Image 1 (cartoon, one colour):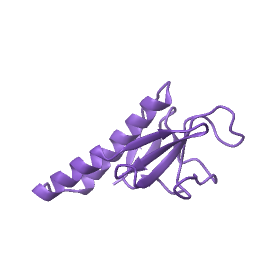
Image 2 (tube, rainbow, N blue to C red):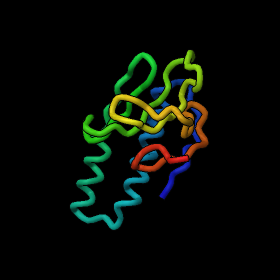
Image 3 (cartoon, rainbow, N blue to C red):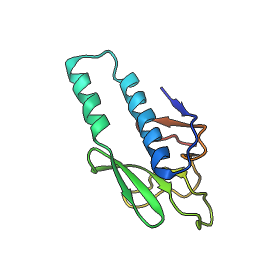
Image 4 (tube, rainbow, N blue to C red):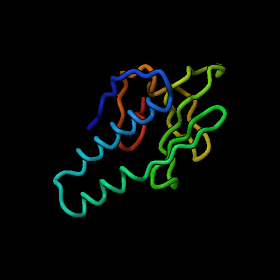
Length: 119
């Protein structure tokens, strides 16, 4: 199931938290029906987020920092992307810079629990 994130925000942190909430909701929809094991998996997924701010990007990790989930541009000086643009991961330390998958400040983008939607 794909979740459409519609809210707009003035700061990156609130936009990222809103996007993570949508990903957690998507995971919960995917993990139905609710069994004891699936409830535990939902809790682990919801608690496993790590946010690391860098000079150009905010890296979003899952599994308590063991798996990169995506990147958000956190600068106004990027030549190709706007502040708040959501980028898919190309590797653990670098985003895919081919196209933005949405913008956490502007809203109106799709997200899945697995990460930013492919183009």
